[in-house]
Image (cartoon, rainbow, N blue to C red):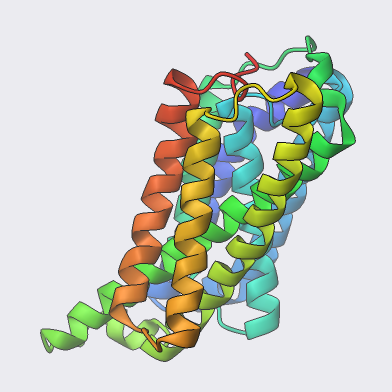
Length: 273
């Protein structure tokens, strides 16, 4: 328990350091920061993984049973997904913006998280495990798509106003940002759709038809449909660029609203604490 508490207090400063290093690499082109930032990302991700494992072992459940447990798991998922993006795309210019979001999630989690060993029996189903794992990766992809959408809009309006500053010089091209955002959106469609399917199966086993009108379930389905429509619009109607990116940012904000306000105030079976 002491180790878990220590890691909980250590993670926000580590993420802040990570954001600072990525910021120095992006805004100041500091050579040591450019060389060390990916290594630091791996170190922070490994420390975070140790924290999640310690929670799982000590409290006998994966940290997804409260909003603030979900926030730390989401922060880790965003970090790992971005790490994969860095290694596959070789583009490292966007880390400051994405890791700032991961830092925010972890900071809120570390402040408010309250772990417990009292795990309801309904959360021990294998369907629940698949549902949560898929949802976490899906929401991490929503976060990354929103971040790339925001960066696209920042670069778009800087170019439109003929202000060719650090954003213009350091960020990838509009085409690259759009491509990375669309890749994340497709991950959202696949993983969030999987989470919804297994969630409904699990819900039917546990509640026997009740709670299908739960606001959180409806909100998640609405979010998923919105991203499905984005993919259809891009593939079939060739709607691209700024419009897709605006919806990507809006989807992220709606998802955050769903995870916080709806989950806490309105949802029934998604509140386990």
